[in-house]
Length: 400
Image (cartoon, rainbow, N blue to C red):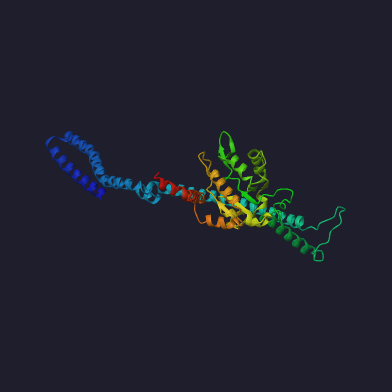
């Protein structure tokens, strides 16, 4: 459209020029005619420029409209080729080269990754196969005596491969049982015989968060904080109880702590993780292996999962988190001393009663306060009954 308008304008200009030339030639002669022609030729480029600028305005507005859209979506090579046809071939060639280069690089990277994966699988499979073969040989070989002779067992008459597999399975079961069950059937030795004195009751204590609390800082690392009143607690309980520390911690951690915590030796026995049952992800204290009469056994703990096999023997207290204003051990001394001096035949009845409360220590305080009030009332009544009646008569008779 712009080119046709330009053509019409040029033709009109030339026509006007010819007319003016003919007129000027008549009026002014040949020299003036040549000047007029030259001036008209100079006007043509200006007119063409004006027309070209006028024709390019819609294109500019279209480009501005596209620039706003380009912020949302980059211009594709097709659009660029439409706007600039002279660069369409170059754009297509460069785009095709870039795409091929990226595809080649991606293919090489995928090939390298696949090779690494195959090597990894091969190494893993080889290591797994070697481990299986070693396990079958190591755990399935027959036992030998000190002289090196093979000791026959129940699998000796089976084929060689079957012998090794069955012995390995038996060994695996043995190690699994060793992890899940206590290391021995009797965790404590038999009770003391006369003339030695055996305490009438056994008190089983958890060490962590009952007697001590683990604490860690950047300056000191791991430390164990002693609970307020623990020295008095051990001293008083040792008069009536056989004290046993039973915890799920490792022995290498427990023994040094108890050596520093109990220099007087009030704790008679120490049981650690190898004495527990491993059930459902928890180390459980099985009192059946304790070698004591369960009527006389009291367990003090804060974790119900560790004593879930014998809940009626458990006296649950709050977990100590290291606060210095704690006084639970002093209340626990009163409870245990009352239980021991009362000579209860079966402690499970008392512990079962307190197990229904969220805070058995607080309930014991309330019961102790009620008992004290009853004793005071009883003593007051007995004192009032103890006054002689004759003396009262004499006072009334004498008017005193």
